[in-house]
Amino acid sequence: MTMTRNQFLRSLAGLGAAALGVSALAACGSDDDKDPPMIGDCAANGTVVSIDGNHGHTLTVAKADVAAAANKTYDITGTSPHMHSVTITAAQFATLASTGTIQVMSTNGGTHAHAISVVCA
Image 1: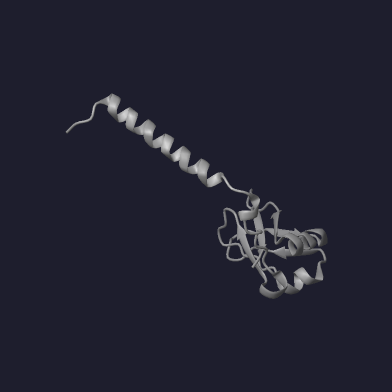
Image 2: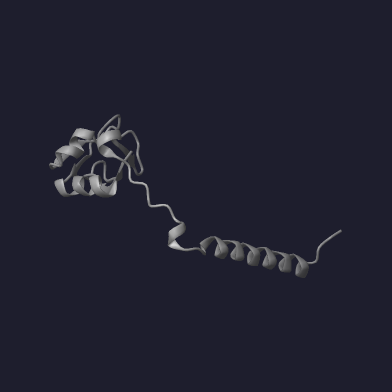
């Protein structure tokens, strides 16, 4: 059996409406139903680092660095043929310890920079 163009468009419209209804139902509910956001524990578990557009760079933020909460500059060159560094300030370490996440930018190297996320594990 073949479907006319009109039948096809109506079936798409019906699927779209159904999808909207499901998403609206999923959005309903009180804040009481939600679990509090999970914040990792840097002191116990250290950090996880993500480097956008990475091509061999590495960054390790040690538990001791978070605990010390002092300005620190890291060389993130890794296996990349060019250098970048990133500085995490004392204030950023305090934010990391309290919220579990920070975003920083590397220095410019090889005509670009990298956005870096540091998250308590």
